[in-house]
Length: 352
Ligand code: FNR
Image 1: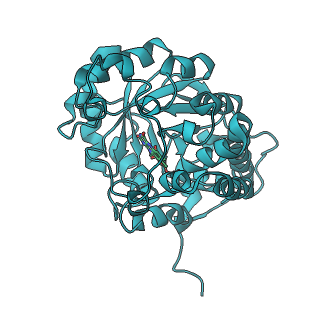
Image 2 (image 1 turned 90 degrees about the vertical axis):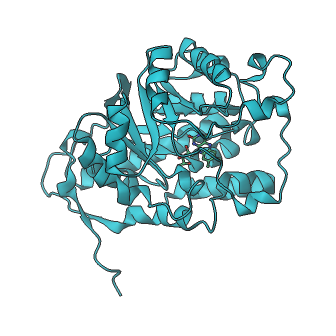
């Protein structure tokens, strides 16, 4: 993990209320997937090329039409208000200043209109809720507020059970939980139930969302090549290789180990993004060399937000971006376009 991210993590751990820290940090079950996901990026070694002109390194890229200074995205995460009073607005500003793209969660703790007003390029993450109507209204508002794509999360028919979180109560007013939904609920008292994820959601949701907004739909939570093909056949414009940061199915395969299979199955038809345990530019470099078009960073952004608001988020993403540029140069590549699988090799058995 990069030193800057380590410092921000330590500071957040000191300042956040323990239940909030645990809620953010936790993984599902025995946290096998959580632990392995971060380590799995080091299961690869790099094969640098000597004597290339790397006096200027270009990290710019375009994702579904959005020009970015670097292939870095902020993963959709619920309730930024628990970390900082400026909530998702601070994350959006920091992400924009670092030249990245923010994915805003359905469970955001600030109205999508207020996030869209300060964000650079951003996408909206969709949980299809039991009440399809409130899902549709929310998605339409996100589109009207400037979201340039939808990210349909496919790995959360039920919320993963996190042991550490089970026993503690997070002090969050219902208004924050339902900030984006309240106005669509009318006088219903069962707001939380209507807003719960619908476990009957299937691939048909891709086309439903596409027709609703005209926006491209990216499916998040893909860990198999055949599943990626199904998503594209159903109309998806891209996929995110993800195990939800180890928060859903414990013992799910680490994204780093699933990525190549998905890239091969997609075969250039659409961008493949990836998240889970990305903590440095080196991690990102491995992902990009394996064929990812971009990487999403999750928890480190929350630690940065808690520690330093928008400035903290900008610093965290800039640190990963600068580390990526440095690593790319040392690999003898001057741009992302030069990266391919020839730059990575599986690590040998641990050196004794
Ligand atoms: C998440 N994640 C998530 N994903 C999603 O699609 N919708 C959501 O609302 C949330 N909420 C959420 C909350 C918190 C506290 C965390 C830590 C994660 C998953 C997230 O988008 C991403 O897949 C992982 O966090 C990436 O792994 P790292 O970088 O945290 O290891």
